[in-house]
Length: 339
Ligand SMILES: Cc1ncc(COP(=O)(O)O)c(C=O)c1O
Image 1 (tube, rainbow, N blue to C red):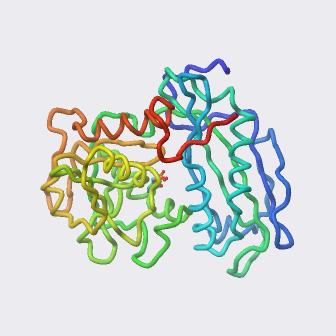
Image 2 (cartoon, helix red, strand yellow):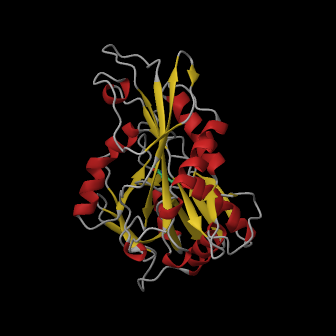
């Protein structure tokens, strides 16, 4: 294993030994290439640079107590990438090629998978881009898929400590019938300004509302949102949020611990009634919401009065982490063990 101060890792890029790549040319994907350079060489008129033909994914590998490396729900990420590719007219990458690339890149960089005790993990970043030079707006005919990895600690500096979120009505992340359900660069570009504003005001992220009516909750910057009340896990149903694989997992775990699960439009005012709330995603895992400040309405919804995560967030967090690290059995077939 590499000499790294694993427990002080943050969520950032650290170079590792290898990345893997595939190219799509003449209507088909080629063979996998293993690279040790973290530089890519593309044409200055490539469609990814001009017209945002870029989709990515994010998943993690964990080292268990037994030393084994476990990759969480990679098939779901493969399927979501296919959907993102369809959404912006890029060549779809077959699930098998995606999985082959993930297994290979983790194997090649296994010395970067943090030790069990550190609580850190290996973040895996697949990326698919249009590389054909074009000046007129139209989809590329050539693509590159690559996967790199980097060891990471918590996404939000506060880790599992509750932190505040803000509603900023003057910004939208995506349009009502736009690209919100895809994991593509353009959505993130559109969220940067409001995200930076929220950070400068001391918030972890923006809690976006639906762009059409500003009546319903959408999601929390780079994470989905859920609220807890009356033994029920409630998460927004919306046509403009990213279908989070973590959220899908938490819904299953909530059911398992005897909670009701509701996925439906959640009006902003319902925030008033939640006993707990959380932001969830691969990077954030669960990031408990301390409070939501609705800055335009001058209103504050407080969930973590004593600065501690609530009992349901804690239980779900521990359960998910236990499955990911192999401390609990993988009942749902979410884990791929690297042999
Ligand atoms: C906009 C957005 N929403 C939600 C999520 C959480 O999704 P997942 O749980 O699949 O990581 C992410 C992160 O991937 C995201 O970028």
